[in-house]
Length: 82
Image (cartoon, rainbow, N blue to C red; front, side, top):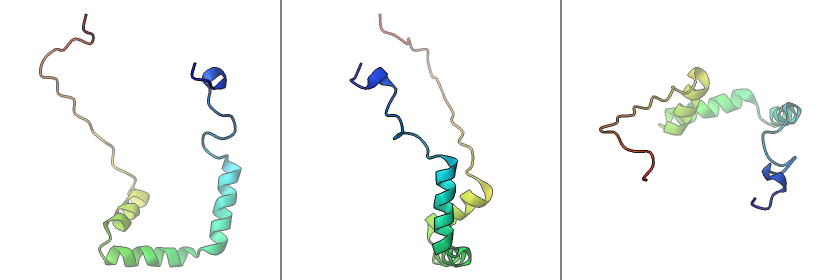
């Protein structure tokens, strides 16, 4: 044991916020940020050649591409040294 009670983490502090807290944050942001202005600024950054802005646009519009990993084993290797 590493000292935490039953090794289950900290209740109430860890993990994702509740849906209601997330919705409250979105409402607060929407009061202060105009969606049209945000889109115009994103477009301006893309026009300037900002790769991160372009990447963000594509990630939200089309989703991130799935990662493909290729595992190539050349020879058998033991899992454990005996």
